[in-house]
Image (cartoon, rainbow, N blue to C red; front, side, top):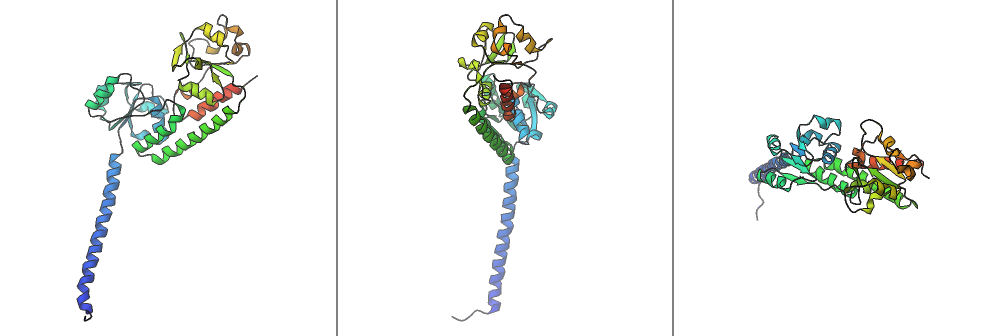
Length: 298
């Protein structure tokens, strides 16, 4: 076969160069289009229907995307500047629609029909499970994926996972676990049962919740029941109107014989959001409860 001359090869080189240039030009817009598509899919108008979720959104850097919250969403301070859509788990659907959200987040809706109505209104809704401490890392990672803050969410989730493992190991090593009565409200008396978040928190802190005798989340108790249980520690998770809550507890008829009262281990003035709210500050709550349990421990 005769060799081709350079002049004959020139058109082939030009053709190949044009093809390569065209392919390179196509690949770049495709990558750009994909990036723009991904960015467009990240919700920019989020409504949170639970204070725990609001805290998590701010903790992973998604606070600026929040356009609606509940009246119970009071931390961090920036959250209080966000318009209110209703109470915890009870949004006003009219107000919600006016906010034009592209994502609504909830942990527990008070009315099952609310979810159906939101679906009828074509409002995207995601349920986030975070009732137990062990569910918080997964909740954070899901929020990170939904809001475009995967790295921040995963980092915080890992910190919480490691912290929980550390506190669990320390709690398991304790030979004696002081009993705690957590008084959530005083009229009538309410406390947390075995299924409550705060019971798990007490366990991680190395204590024993006397409410674990009842397989409920929260329930009403009688003064006589508390006296019989004889807790080592009493923690009042509310603000009294006139006198300090701890002082009122110590004066209750028949309570002077309770170990916590007798040994002056009745406490109040808590930020109950750290202890009753499943959220990104759980390790801070466990640390506070642990300090409470171990202070003046017999």
